[in-house]
Image (cartoon, rainbow, N blue to C red; front, side, top):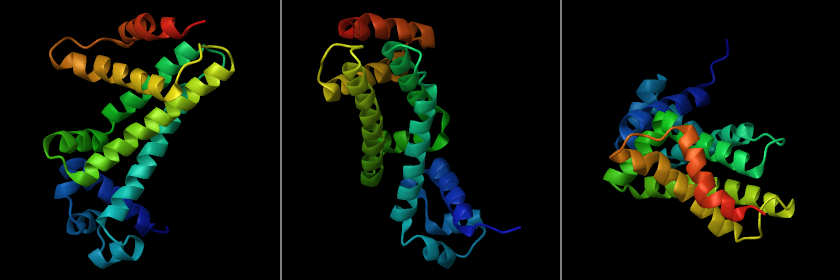
Length: 190
């Protein structure tokens, strides 16, 4: 059996970042979790930032893949945008790393974590924007500014999924879909 040290290091680092956050994770912790010497880590990654960046890049790719898998070409733009957005935000909630980073960004404001969270949000916005542009080209929705529309769609979803339930009972997926259609999609429909 061939041991993939690089992957073991990535797995250990992901676990450490998920448990302790970026700021509190050390290369010593990662080495202990990976059961390697600290020097071994540096044969693959020049520093903690590079290691973190690779983990986040994979996380974003996995999140985009989850959203893409939620899209069904036989369904309407409205149904697909709802499914893809919900899947991306659900992905963020289900993965301990994103939860920990969200908390660290909110509570500590670690600069590199703030940048990563912006990168994650930007990847979601680009994904949505591309779907909006395609829907405009296909005549499924009215001509609009895709960048602004993507921003509004994402922020509404975040508000309905995360912000609403801070002080209220959570909305289920169907309720969110109905509100989303009422407030946004009917305005885009032809």
